[in-house]
Amino acid sequence: MASKGMKSLNEAFRSLSLAAQSCRTLPGRQVSAAYRRSMATASDPRPTNITRSVTDAWDPITSVPLTIYSFPSLEPRLLESWSTKHLHLPLRRDILHLAVVFEGDKTRQGTASSKTRYEVHGSHRKLRPQKGSGRARVGTKQSPLLRGGGKTFGPKPRDFSTKLNRKVYDLAWRTALSYRYRRGELIVTEDGMELPLPEDFLQLAEAGVLGRELEDGFVRKYVDELMAALQWDKTNGRTTFITGDRRPNLFTGMEIAGENGRALELEDVDVKDLLETGRIVIERSALRAMIKEHSSDLETRVVVKGLNRRPRLGQAIVW
Image 1 (tube, helix red, strand yellow):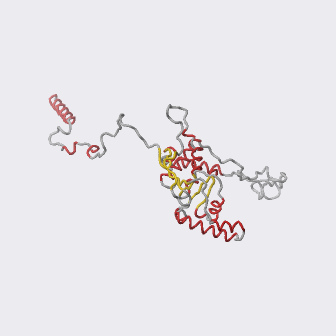
Image 2 (tube, rainbow, N blue to C red):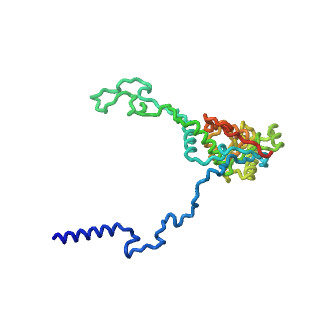
Image 3 (cartoon, rainbow, N blue to C red):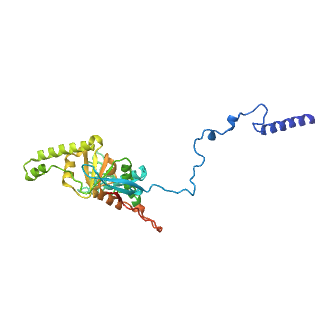
């Protein structure tokens, strides 16, 4: 019996040692060289050295060109260099969403108001006895269950505005401008952008010879032809004009032919306005004022000698 136990124990140890061997050393289990390589390294086309040496110069893009055009001929007048932190930021949909929701909440009036049972005019006596009338129990006529009574949980004047960090909001402005610039939909013109209506028409309009209908019809046709020639009309996504102050001919023409676009003063522009229409046509001074106002996130308390605290606005390259 002891010999049989030792024999079975030896067989068990032999099987354990056989199982612990590598698959390459097992008899009859030869693995080909093709399967010995790792699948990750067999077909990896990426270079082995993907890190930059410390001796290599790091020269990132710090500026982008911006052409200043004349309006409405769109002849190039000036070439400027702008910082990438102003007009070449990556698209951040989350930040744009926060800015648009913040602006929408701020514009909600919140003036809806209803009267409670304590604000409805009239006596607060009980309308009929509690018992004996054969009808349902009822209190005062201001009860919300009766017609003309107060409103239960009705709306009251409230402020719907939400909060958003100033630096995040300013970043959203420049992100929207960068999105337009990268798509070629940001057109910057010289200061004084105005709709060039014919002189003879302006003289007749000032003299009062033409009626209101004739004036509006001529301006509508003129704006439609001009926008179609520039490919800025409604079939091409409409256009938003942004100026420093109100220009009579431009604003009146865009109000009459509003299906082609709109004209806004700088103080009336929001982030949502920069994203709605097909392109943005803005004056050079208005663009500089817009970026200068919304650059709070570029300021830092750490001062490094030889470096500017804030990127400069557009610098002329070619006159």
